[in-house]
Image (cartoon, rainbow, N blue to C red; front, side):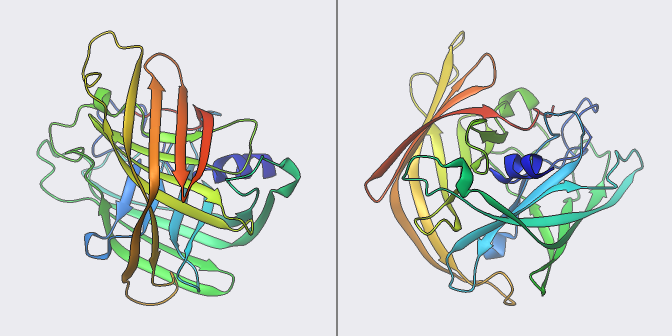
Length: 298
């Protein structure tokens, strides 16, 4: 179980067993959930897991007591099932974990990974299950008790990545969305939210004191590869941001800093599950080879 947790810890994630549906929206809840009035934190939902369990998982990426980025992973939310009624109301729950591990700027040390049970977590999804125009916005609410502190947030919606939540959503244009990791480096990873020529990515890594931290980036597809038929790979480039904000357990939210800290690049093989990640933070450069952890949802 610890390896399963540690693997999912890499990017945090969550997803449901809606993969058997022919259309992604609104049956599938994979994506980036946020409050548009509180830009700067969110909940990643990915999956189903590649092991075929179809369990949901989720990652909260927010800010700790010092206002610095931190994240928690709930890799196995139980009691979720596909919904076929006209109105969806599904609640799932599970254990939430906090991890620590190797600094992203140093060689990976397997023994440095520590997984600690931090509390309990639940998410609820509501909205229509069949509406060709998606006239009603689906919403997420979530709650958690982490190290004795309680958290509850309502009215989270899927963030629109290059028009991904519109009625004309094309699953084939979201082929790289998922959780990506290096199987030889358990405990960290990259949450990728892709649609057409845009990727929003969150790097779930560890700082120099081995504490969980994260960086966000918006990547645009490089020209002339965008849409080129028969391309063997697709490349996305953009700036990397280091942010600060209100601690997760404090009511309300304010983003206090969004600093351009470096650059990031993701190159995906169009055939198979491989990707190359290169990023820099304040002069520290990192290059990794990644594979998809969560199965693709169509």
